[in-house]
Image (cartoon, rainbow, N blue to C red):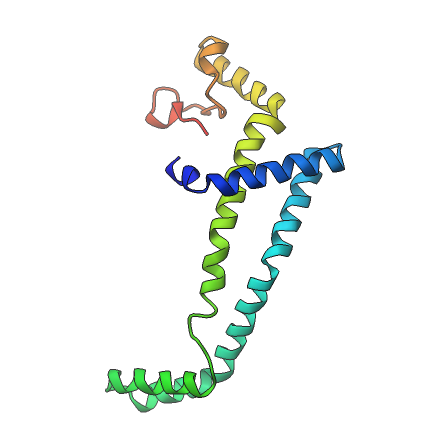
Length: 166
């Protein structure tokens, strides 16, 4: 859970937005989750467009890059210099399609942990109770001992993965 603590500010922000959307939309938590996902994707659209634009630029010069690679097969250093020259001539940053993707990763990790936490604690307490009952029945333990368990092990009793929590 170290990763979750690193992304705690994002998790808290998304959690607050999710609860706010649920209070505004009302009804099912599913609609709030969909609304939060749409809002997050809308906020990330500029990064996605920048990434796609950069990828299209790279695709346009790909034939020239391949020609340079074929011409300088034996001389890797010269090959790299010529490829960089092609990129400079066309005002292309080869990492420009990579950085927007990397910038989106923390957001999606934060969104994942938010939904994981909210689903377990707030949204689906009835489902959690059902899992707890199934786990307690399968492992022949008291209900209070199954409090931290959220997934039944499906015949894994006595194995290392059996008592894992989600």
